Image (cartoon, rainbow, N blue to C red; front, side, top):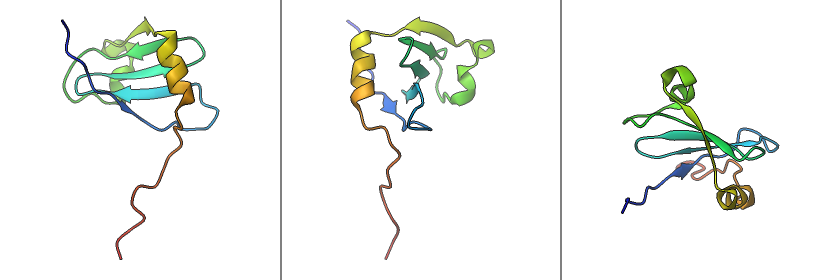
Length: 86
């Protein structure tokens, strides 16, 4: 049985953007919410946005429609967590 993986979901760049970026310890992915596919990096520690390039081993994979629906329902607007120190 495979272990569960925790993913960080990043805020969208723009409200109307069809892409959501998620990242784990070993992978990064850009999910296209309109096509139900993701560009998934090759597994390696320290993944960054540059690893989403096909020349660096990223591949397009199908995404479960239920996951896409859940991602669409999230409020992925950038939020201020700490406004500063007083």
